[in-house]
Length: 67
Image (cartoon, rainbow, N blue to C red):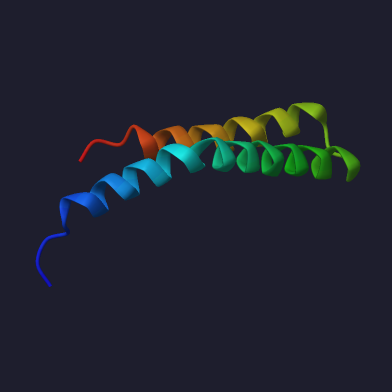
């Protein structure tokens, strides 16, 4: 199949713009759950901050990667 029609590109961009806050909210919930699980298991608070930083760093690294 050839290239995508122009209208499909606009639909994909619109869907990404509309769903990005939802994905950000779900990611924030996932980070909060992982921090809570570490603290509930008796881990140090510093370890929870390290885990949150590692998750954030991995996400930013993927977004800012150069081709």
